[in-house]
Length: 404
Ligand SMILES: Nc1ncnc2c1ncn2[C@@H]1O[C@H](COP(=O)(O)O)[C@@H](OP(=O)(O)O)[C@H]1O
Ligand SMILES: [Mg+2]
Ligand SMILES: [Mg+2]
Ligand SMILES: [Mg+2]
Image 1: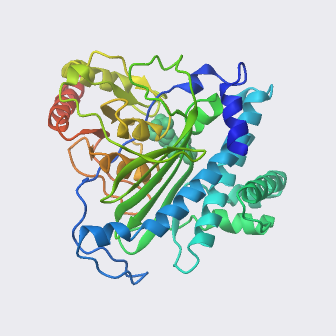
Image 2: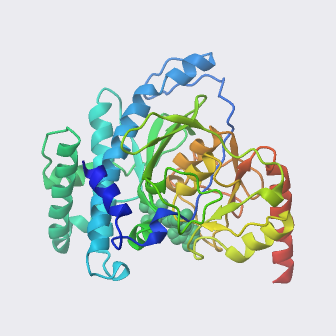
């Protein structure tokens, strides 16, 4: 019901920035879309060794079902908060509290649902938020708001076990894991694209699962992403229903369904080989990625279409269904990418036939803790276009360096 209300709000006149309906883009990662034939097992979970694709791909079904449930519920919570935020007279950017409430609330819901649904397994979560500020004296009112929101969301989702403030703090803080290359770790960005969320634009609830350092499943809930393709549509005028849930499990492909529960359909990245026909996604925020550099690369490639700029890992989702063919992300010097900004998106794209690498062409390594250590930037496209893109990226980086 919360989703229905929120969808109505999104299509209602004047309640939301029209940009919401369409987009901007963001986020990358790597991965081979080839199913892993090497044994998949977890020391911590004593997962049995599998030697066939079928066995390997069957093994995360339970985790995937729990992840989809958790992200769908968290999306309802975020939609409720964004609706209230956009309907209020408060200038979005000057009032940070709604976003804080939604970030924490989403993290608590995902953490709680995963632990409840997978209660027989050890639980490790690497997540963006922690409860430090909520434990301070001036955080008490916010904490109470979050607890209320979390309990309403869980009750609407059929999970009737009211949580106390302390339960909510504990659920948030279970996201303190350091991840790593051993065993299984969930990786969560409870709201990716916070700036987009505040603007009424794109954001995503992004949840991945690492097993032995590899992303083996990913779920992206994108409440404001239109179900219709962004390709060939002016992003500011696209009409129709919004709210997409992308999910991928290693070796089984990527699927998309509506957030309110339509039949999933398999999606694939664009198969274009001609860069002139390709369109590319990048961050809406110039502070998150160097737009001058991506423009140079696009020019070198001969890309004719202007960049599609949207917030969050919704970029990975849109790319996985072929809305555009390329995603480039070049943070400014000194920025360290976090694993939760790319884990879910990377597997969603690679399972749809795409490739995600750093600017040196190396796969992203999610096994080294909370950060990704990578060369310069992240690039994403289909397998045929990748060599051409990589060339253009490396030439452009050299030109940029020599002009400094
Ligand atoms: N200076 C910077 N350079 C690159 N990424 C940054 C950044 N500052 C913040 N980010 C990350 O960019 C993410 C949003 O990406 P995008 O630009 O694709 O929407 C943010 O996620 P959160 O919104 O979860 O904090 C944050 O982790
Ligand atoms: Mg993020
Ligand atoms: Mg976030
Ligand atoms: Mg953040």
